[in-house]
Length: 90
Ligand SMILES: [Fe+2]
Image (cartoon, helix red, strand yellow):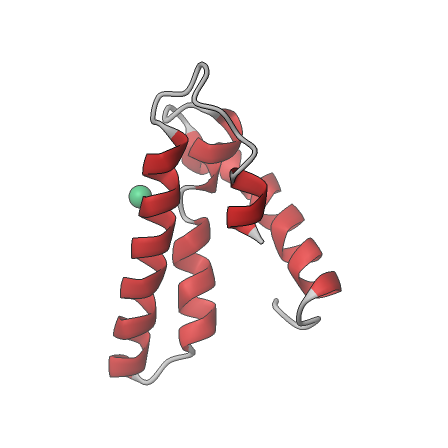
């Protein structure tokens, strides 16, 4: 879902190239899933959490205050995810 949306984004005015963010989301999510499996916690939730941890950079194009800016985007993405894919992510 994130990748299909990010494919349409350009590098214009970004602090980091969108390609960097795509790779960072993917690798962070994979590492989180491996750690979750080793620690006996939900790998899907860990993977989604890691995938969204820098969504503020993607949406605002800036690194400054990206954590604070991310909140509204995380809620929007979870709502979309729940309504179109799974329906129960808190
Ligand atoms: Fe990060």
